[in-house]
Image 1 (cartoon, one colour):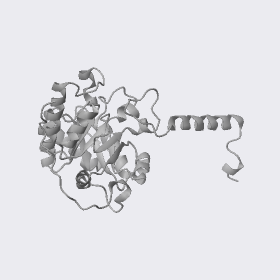
Image 2 (image 1 turned 45 degrees about the horizontal axis):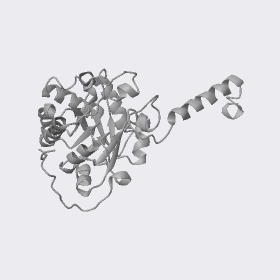
Image 3 (image 1 turned 120 degrees about the vertical axis):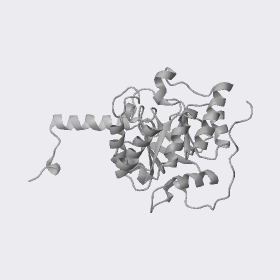
Image 4 (image 1 turned 180 degrees about the vertical axis):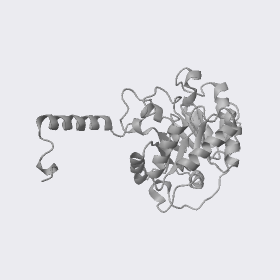
Length: 291
């Protein structure tokens, strides 16, 4: 592969302070904390969240960044893709996550059709997420094609997380969810995309479904944190959809997912036991009844 179009990241010594995971207790994590973590070589985790209850659990666990993803379309709203998710739905879900948290930096997706028309459209909808939902940052898909939009939002004071590689909102153009960045031409395009979003002012960039060596190269030459999802171990951070990592998703999950629990089986077992108790008349018992 030829020389990377990204400029090497400047190494700066920063005082070792409170770590991101579980460390900040008196305020929310900020984009400056993430930049400091990049300088210090501190890795961090991000999970999706779509409601106050689950977000509160992750917040208490010390997860520093929560993403209100348009993946809610697949995980909670019954859609086959993220494409049908609306701005009103994203505002509602994002507001719930903000209300359920005290410490995590909450990032919300701009859904399909909410920013592609023009930077002005993106500004209007990003402002909705900031004002109505109270999120601290927004995320949008696209590299070079979205650079102008990112620049406008950042100039207006809205922190932007970029998303390149496999961009799920483009599922119909991709014809599915193929790995991106394979081959020299595709790899160079990903590097150009990473450079473009960094220069536009994005505070971080998600790298989805790209070869591990390419993700590591982007990370090594990027001044902003990289967040991998199917990008191998060489990125600065990792993100997973919570229903995947907790074992709530039915059927096969993507190769890059590690399941840390089997909540689907746990809930099914609990529901079965409840139904049995009701059918047999053992619930409610005296201890669950008023006299």
